[in-house]
Image (cartoon, helix red, strand yellow):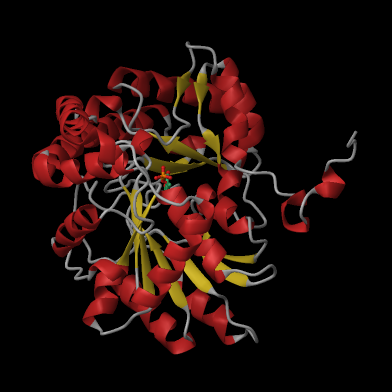
Length: 403
Ligand SMILES: Cc1ncc(COP(=O)(O)O)c(C=O)c1O
């Protein structure tokens, strides 16, 4: 009988603890708790009749193919639909530049597996998406975090740090549009500056864009991928997912990049997944080509921006300046970032908040190293407007009790 399982695990997985956010969800079973914790899009925005129609058609016309194994990089006609979709965003690709993934998380996993050996350096913002940190941590890299600013990565600090390094990081990971967890959008100037850094130091940029089309105010800013293409570069890999703009349950996304890199990612996919279900790809293709994408996105934008407005208005009312609490005001996406006075540890605050029947994600999950403790990530897309207003009041009472 094996008793010491740990001694059997690979060195790289022995101390791997997985997704830290997952651990708070056990506290959220009480239905009276208003949760602002998950990253869930609202099911009100699922295209229910479009999904049903596309499903029924697939099962009626193509059942045998749909439930068969299919190609590793992805279905040819789906990849073509993705190529057309990206043209709208100023990105021009051949099929060999695209690999279909089983969601954004899988895209991150392929990226980590392809580029990282244990001990390799990577650079990313502080804070940044916890799922990216956990995906990259599976390869045991050294993470160098740089504090993010209101208009995106602190590019001067990135450059300063790079100038002092003997070994270059394998890549810089960024979420330029409505970053998870802060909701911050990277300015055009900083996107260009990141590219300058990428060319100067010969470092790949991994641009993760799950929220790009969920803009509620302000003007769209070109993606770093498209800016790189304009400058005739090949330094950016783009990660996309249908989770937030369509539905997360379908688990489909795609990575884009230079042909050699995408071929490698596809080889890895052959080893860690084989193929993304054809059924899911076909439904996503129908989403892009048959379900009136623009009308759907306009609906999502109206719906989510109303929720964001309610949240921000109620925050202003219930968190007067003397409480010393600040928060970001995102122009899109699903999240914002709340900073409480430094003496409050939001892990402790979370346990108190549960008593007040409200929940958020403590901010320390979003740091690759040396976590800050006085932040919380708030999701405003899932709760109803009434719940959001009530959640802010409960949060305010909870914070007041700590001051
Ligand atoms: C920045 C970022 N990248 C990737 C993902 C993963 O998305 P998926 O649900 O498709 O795995 C998320 C999900 O929250 C995200 O916020």
